[in-house]
Length: 397
Image: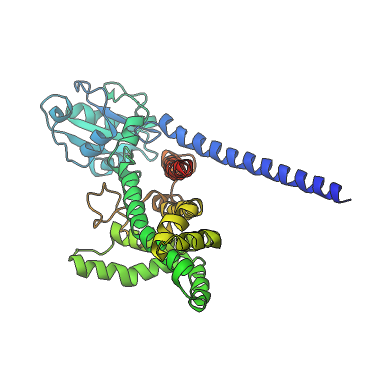
């Protein structure tokens, strides 16, 4: 009977593990499928075209050039390789200012003709209009329809997914914000976490450990939004006054909040790992003349390095993947950070803030899935590095 139970249990575990693996692979596959779809979208919004005067020699424009043209930061065509003439921007709503309803038609049936007239009368004009209105009009030069280049996304320094006529999906500011916040969070949390875990495992009396351990473990169950409110109420004003900042929401505020959130995980796992060191090894070290701190540094920590590494990995995972608390205290500015005291935005915060507003299947929607893929690889790389260092230390021993 016992053998049958063991076989059934083994098969249940096998099926469960296989099913979990398949589900994870399907999730990763779906994530990659949606992310890759971004690069098949046109630069200009679907259903729209950019129309120029026939004499304009411009054949192609990048998303950044289009944005600067319509933001009127580029005012002459020679700045983008064209002839020396001023740029005049035209949008569909400008028709209502130029023509009456009777001239345009009750159903805009004459709109295409009027748009063509405006373009032909203004050699420097660039018009952003629905393609269906001018598809049969002659005497108009259309900008070549290109798909979103991978280089502009992976190396782009601007994130403006709702820009018209051409959204911009440069992800470098978001990657930079994520790495800045996560790095400083771990830089702050790791020494404090290790110090407290060593104190609890090796120095603290049983009574102190009895009360401190449950309190620290309880911190793991506090919702992240509560940490966010704490950051807004305490950390943000403190940083603003201390560093004389125009706004206290910054990368450092996010790092401090994440460090506080990661501390319970690092302390709990590392303390359990330190306490797993056999008592006989401690006693042997002390018997050979080592002090308590020499024993901790030379014997206990090397023996427990695997468990400590696990705590560090879990802490990094908490820091890299945190959403709500970071969104509340970092300023949510999608710009490439040059200082930890500046507002910034992380990848998880961007996904959380924008996914609900992005039309399903559109370029904005797919760009958020691409951010998920980038976050996956960042986490995978960091965890692989930590595991490599841990394995190397084991090999040396």
